[in-house]
Length: 137
Image (tube, rainbow, N blue to C red; front, side, top):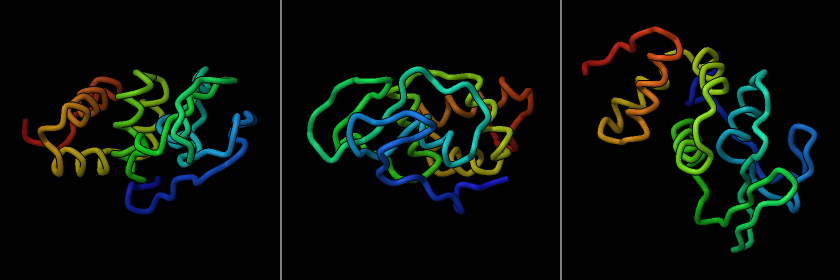
């Protein structure tokens, strides 16, 4: 089991999960989570990456965004990015929660209890795993 404190997210790449990127870019959101935690899930049709250029576009199954969209290189940063820009992938989130366990999510809730993304993740964790986090409501 990996924890958010010991995780190293990928840097710029040209290919990821047998998919060529249109240009060298840093995988973010679900792409970074799948790669970092080696999740065995169906890969979403469109993945996201951050380019060094200031141009947004979608090409060849990749959503390329600008450097200003770069999330912080943490579990919370990539999960927040995924919910904000990529929508819900329940299978991926469940597999991720099983891999990380409750500790990283509990830490996220304690650090940012008023964040709408953190509160959604808290709900999703408890709903998908049918397991209550050790947190006060």
